[in-house]
Image 1: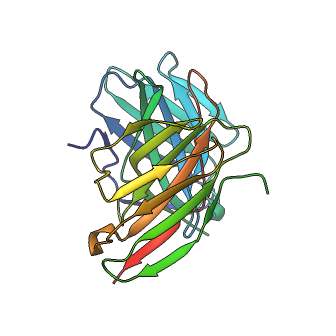
Image 2 (image 1 turned 90 degrees about the horizontal axis):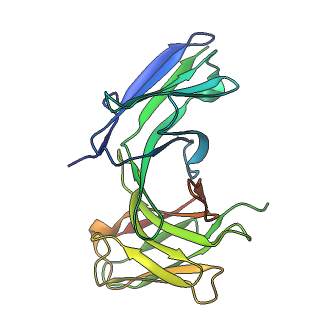
Length: 114
Length: 114
């Protein structure tokens, strides 16, 4: 049972336009969410995070929106650049007795076309 | 480079052989995580250390897998009697203990079991 879902395996966007990547989760105990970007042959790189007490967090061209009632978050990239072409993973975390347990979605491959 | 490093980057082995991977975390990070990633999937949690203590293990971690972090610095992940199903990317991440922490990933070790 996938607790974190990214239903679009791939997305293509024209350079300069907005990229919107979506993520849905099922566990209402998740209280912290992150987006990672991964290039081929590299490990995932942290992009941006959001706590469940917020509904929006912005960092430069990247904005993450959280809709707790819908258990949905999205990553907006504006404007999209060819260097943004990568696989994007959504991750969700809940605190347990030891700390945090991260659960990752399957990823969405973004292609930004020049 | 003060990021997370992993060695080796690639490993090809025959079924039944033992393999060992090493991870060097960011120096001040007290938490260290091991993940496994297969094609088309996000990273799946395997195990986690806080300093030298192994605090949590996933049910994915069979008896053939063992991880250590003897002095609370680098960590090793050993797979005994490898099987073809063990072929995957093995990722290490580290973090500094915090209420809502960010994990930073290494480049991964790609294992191919023939």
